[in-house]
Amino acid sequence: MQSFKFNTTASLVFESGAAGRLAEIVGMRLGRSILIVTDPGIRRLGLCDDAVASLRAAGHIVMIYDQTEANPSQACLMEAVEAGRAAHATGIIGFGGGSSLDVAKLVSLLLGSGEELDTAWGVGNAKGPRLPLVLVPTTAGTGSEVTPVSIITVGGEEKRGVSSPILLPDIAILDPDLTIGLPPPITAATGVDAMVHAIEAYSSRHANNNPLSKMLARQALQLLGANIEKAVLDGKDRKARGAMLLGSLLAGQAFANSPVAAVHALAYPIGGTFHIPHGLSNALVLPHVLRFNAPNASAVYAEIATDVFPDLVSEPGGQARCAAFIERLADLSAKLGLQPRLRDVGIGEEYLAGMARDAMKQTRLLVNNPRDVNEADALSIYRAAW
Image (tube, rainbow, N blue to C red):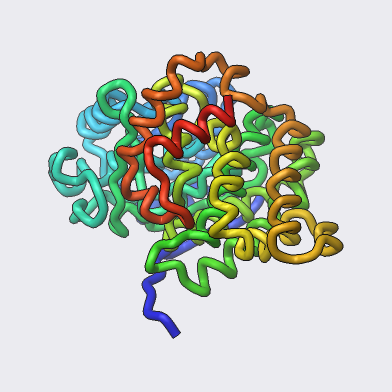
C-alpha cells in the first residue's frame, strides 16, 4: 500500500437551518468580535441575515465585509484584511461562494500570523497561526470549505494560490437551505465545477493520489450526476440541493488531497483575464482537456463514467466508454444551459495564444495531469474549445 497524507476540515455540520443557529454552533470558538466575509449578492438576498442576527443576539460584535468579487483580486483581499483589523476581529466567518471563502481563509491567516502575503504564496509556505475560522458555503461547487487552498488574482490577470493545511477551517457549516435561491446558471456552473474536482482528483498523477480521495471522488460523482439536472430545473428541490452540497464537499475533500490538473490550469486564464466565473471556465474546457488526456487516461475515465451516467454500463469498457463519457459531459453542459464555446462568452480567437502562455504558469496543476501539456498543446485545446 502506498504512503499518503489526508487532511480535511476538523468538524463538519450538515443541517438545514444551521446558519440561523450559528452562535450556538460556533460562537464560543470565534470570540467576541467577528468579521463576516461575503459578497454583495449574498448581502442583497439576505442569506446571511439569520446568521448575523443569531450572533448579535448572543452578544457578539459583528462586522461585515461584503465587497468580495468573483475571482477576488489582491486589492479585494487587503480591503477585507483592513476591515478585520479595524474591527479587532477575534474570529472570521467566510459566508458565500468560493471567492468569499478563499478571501476569508487568507484574512484569518494574515490577521492571525502577521505574515506577509508574498511569503505565503505556493505550497506549504503559510505557517500561521491564524484566527479562528468558520466557512459557510452557499453554492454547491468549489468545496473550498474543506480545501487548504486560496486562489487570488494578482496583477489583474494572474491567478496565484496559497496552499497550506493551516487554511483548513475549524468548522464548516453546510446548510442546504442557503442554496435554495441559487439561480440555474450558477447552480449549473458550480455543479460542473464540483464534477471537475472529482474527475481530476480521481485521475490525478500527483504522488498523493490515494484510496480515500478516489473513494470520495466516486461518491461525489454519483451524487452530482444524479442530482445536477434536478437542482437546475427545480431550484426548490431540497433533496437535490442537499445532495449537490454534499457532493461538492466530498469532491473538495478528494481534490484537497489528490490535486486537480489541466482543466483547472486552462480555466484560470479564462477567469483571470476575462472574468468568467470559475465553474463556467472549467466547463468550457472540460471535454477538450479530457479528449486530449484520453490516450493516457481512457481506462481511468472509463472507471468513473458509470458513476455520473449509470446507463454507460452498456458501453464496453476502455476507449469506447471513455469516449462516450466525454461526449455525455459535453452534452450535459449544453443541457444545463451553459455556453459551450469560448466565443460564446466573448473571447476572441486572437486571445488564445496569450491564454496558452498564461496557462503554462500553472505548473503546480499541470504536473498532476495524466498527460504532459506544453504550450502548443494548450493552444490546440483552446482552439478546439473556441
